[in-house]
Length: 506
Image (cartoon, rainbow, N blue to C red; front, side):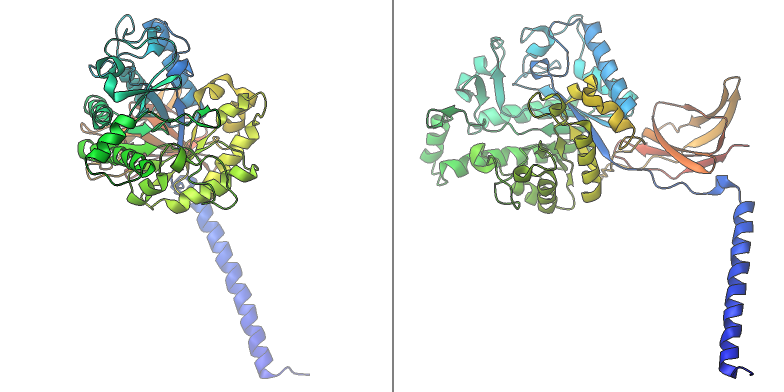
């Protein structure tokens, strides 16, 4: 029986469709095969902030002990930075002021006791440790963030130097437990912290400044209550001048003013420098669902949610020192809370308690740190995190180095961009192929005013792109014998990327 016209017409269309599809696929296959693999465009450069705190207080991380010679201190710096380069980290947060002292020469504060064992005595032979750290970090394409403790003045049995603020201006310093503390209610004490910041910004080529959670001290239990912080003098002066805030609100306002002053000082002096804050990980118990614990708002008079609302920092690193499965202080719940509290202009890069790998009672395993990094990547953009502290990475506690390198740090990453009005992308690099007895290499010819901090480099091998970064001072990159093509871009200190240059390898 002859099929109806409509059915014959539909069948004809189906045959034409399948014929056209087959021809199209065949043409695409031939075309793709004819196009050199070198012409494929590599993906965008991976972006992630990967930082680590290097604590100098009590020689936690560096120097490894007091009294090392200059050569020994510098050798330790090189070993640390080579490790960070090996692990593909891109930022170090170096503690430069741990207790109203300094690991660099300054007339404002004495040398840190961590260097020589005596506060006020510098390293011998004389050198500038901070300048050395900056130079060697930048030579490896690693950012250097200067970490200051804003209010802690002294800790430990070693006596303060004659030039220490507790000896020069004892009225600004309070004794609290085993600590000496700069009173945030004393304007002159906070002026000293700002003066230290201005000195650092003026004299050093920093990528960022960073403060932690030491504003008013954490409460010390005393009997059935906490030991009161002895700020009666500054509090009574406030009342006598017409102050109307409660004592708790006044203390919080002192801290708020300090944070705002740091923010405005950085913006005024060097807007291309980032400002980062690392507060205690819980804002207020109950503000995030199911979260309980220490209340920093009431306990140390810190109000990080307010700082975020005002946009007073460029990156925010709450100390999320708990595991993913710890319900009352859940890592992902707290991460979500802080991300929701932050404006779009502020990056949220949490602090990870990597040193808990060495905790004898409740240790992490390396898989916990990897899990937390993956959660950060899933939930925050641009992603980032900081390890506290270097020691566990150095010791390779619980095999953390291998765990990172074989998973979340298998590939390099550029730090997220931080554009400012004074920043610009570098010019596209000029590259050429050179051949030597050792093999092929790429040579880069920078311009005279080239602001390149690192190079982003993609190499194509067997149809697959591989990404890596190289310090901006590098001018030659060795190539594998199987390299088919190379793509290079230049990246500035603020993470701004140039146009790409590409080269096919015959």
